[in-house]
Image (cartoon, rainbow, N blue to C red):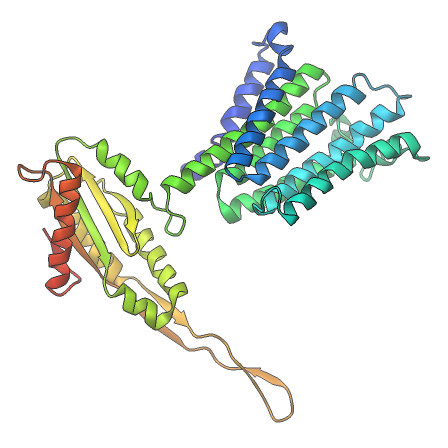
Length: 405
């Protein structure tokens, strides 16, 4: 539970709370507040360049819509009065469209900027301010009054400085973003949630500088979340959720003088793939990865590549690590899952279709483990890994489903 809360709160929640605290406690003086426009410009440029360089199109488009929203409020809504129809229209339409745009970007996949879909998204973003401009200058109806129609009558709604359509738009956007967080559990998805929170506070502020600071914070949250997401893709294996080989190589450099390395290989994995298919092979890798994540004794698992995994035991010699690896080997061998055959339809004589009963087969896999620790012969991490790999070869040669040190 605590881990889930930390995952959702970092880094977006921390950045938002930092901004909220500085503004709430009035720790920013007038000089710093006057730099709000500069901070938004810097965040926008960094976000667009980073998103373009690393193909994070959602970041590019999200930063653009946040910046456009802030600039629209700055230039058209400096001090809205009841008679200022243009300012009221821009304020109401922006407070509805911005959260919906962020929710939409939280849902879509990375499709590139100059691809057909990327150009379509650019046109969609540009169309919105153009449409608002045409409505303000050539429209014959008062859009602002339409947005101020109350659907519900409750005392607490009158205390919210947002129209009910805007509040509904934020509610829909938060719901969509939370669904994306639950489904994908990525830093970028949680970043969109916290960006929405920051944007919401921006619309609830009457000070232009403070509002711009919240918009800049929303952009900063998205940039940092994209960096965190890129870091996770480089250092974490997407299929199993374990640290990837690059993370393993960095961890090896941080070890002290006493440690053990275990090399783990799934027995007959190629034959298993050929028999049941690669999609079932992926299930096996996920299952083994889940068991490795539960290894005790302070072991640090990672995926080495293919069907090979590693577990590092800092501060432990081989004899101390083997009992934990033996429990791991047994846990993997005792884990099984059902293979369900694909459903087939067969037509009856009278033309109706009947679904055949699915057959299930319980399958399990075993692993072979090679163990080596740092000693007088194997001094460097590379030498210890090589020794563990040689021990793994001996475990497989001896019949598999065993540990060799």
